[in-house]
Image (cartoon, rainbow, N blue to C red):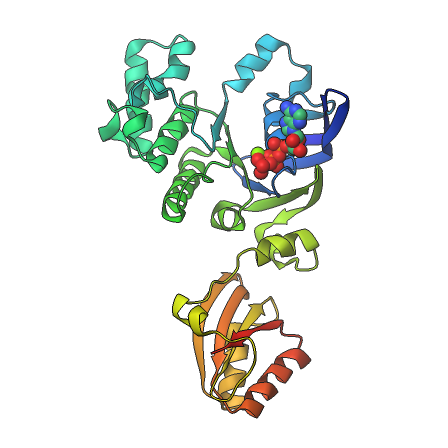
Length: 342
Ligand SMILES: Nc1ncnc2c1ncn2[C@@H]1O[C@H](COP(=O)(O)OP(=O)(O)OP(=O)(O)O)[C@@H](O)[C@H]1O
Ligand SMILES: [Mg+2]
């Protein structure tokens, strides 16, 4: 178990000082995958770096498996750090070393025998799916492959904790998903606790069980993934959820008009929530108002019995009928936005 207890950190530069962390507390259970989300400059990297004391907090404690890291000697700390792996946005591989030798590095530094290094590195390359790249150099690898090497290297000393600082921010969406899948596998197969920071809600949704939101150095809220996602009242969470903008089909954008006009139909984006289901919306249109419609896009996620996300509809009724439906949404507190007419 990891306890981050009332950590504060102020940076001093020339005559200015800046409080990057302000009494942040968070408990992480063994085997959990916890995400910390926040905007740029919120203090995420500073926080994750205090966990293994790469950044020493001004006050507060970091207690990992009962040991207070802020009170360890540098020798003890070095020992404990070996059991904490870390991966970064820009991979930090050594370009002069092969994939095998990059992964072997922490073991060499630890004085591990050649045979053991051979055995261990091959096993790690298998876990990350890079057995056939052992003798390649980082420059010949894709971004996703580089991050796999970095993950294998981070696992070399059999860590109990993996810290990930924006580990997928430099990757395209498909590669991001494959790396997140790998992290999930590692968590499940090896039982490693994962703490990851990100500014993307998608990353949190894909892997985390628990989430903490940090803003301007303060911990704003924490909870399970579904608690956080359904907390629509929280202005910071709202911004993250709304930043998942539902893009319109290109063909529609080109003919979208701002004002209603005869022969054009409204495009309505609807925000789903715990109490507003896709089924409820569609059955109102179909059974109650009996108007034709097109479901253009849906981004729906289910947590237990609740759904979240957005749908984009085009109402194809007469002008008045469409207006009645929009009034129905408003009366029933169904959050809707008319994106335009097409
Ligand atoms: N070594 C440092 N010296 C001075 N200021 C620093 C230092 N490290 C971080 N800061 C400041 O602390 C604040 C938090 O930085 P941090 O890197 O933790 O943010 P972040 O949430 O990781 O942002 P990003 O998403 O952009 O990586 C920023 O305003 C940053 O300028
Ligand atoms: Mg950062």
